[in-house]
Image 1 (cartoon, one colour):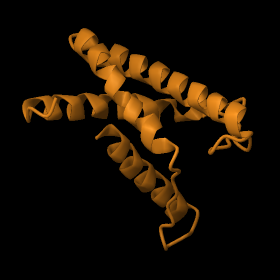
Image 2: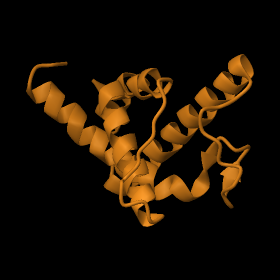
Image 3: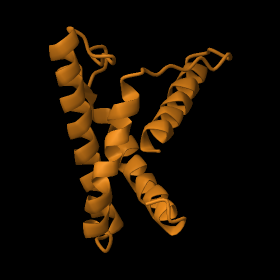
Image 4: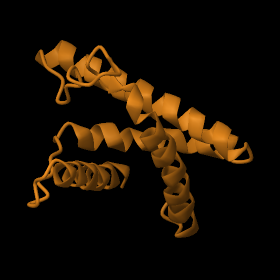
Length: 128
């Protein structure tokens, strides 16, 4: 479930990015590698259960750090195994080893809070 949702969010993100760059075709891009990486979000469900009562700002910061960690680790591992990471942030000003962009912190903050809503919805539907 999370793998597919991650793909959808990435297609929306890159499609909107192409629009902002003047591409009215809304060209979007993702990678097959991303499905299992986004699928790792299932491992964050117990984290959500533990931090559920925390203030929203603190929860968002937790998600931001966790998502940065997964993005960095998975990019590093793919680079080690294949010689290249599917994403390359070397062109960005606030990159770390070309694997994460620190200016994406607000995005990961918000995506983490969205994840909470999705997790709760899946639980209420008895899917989890």
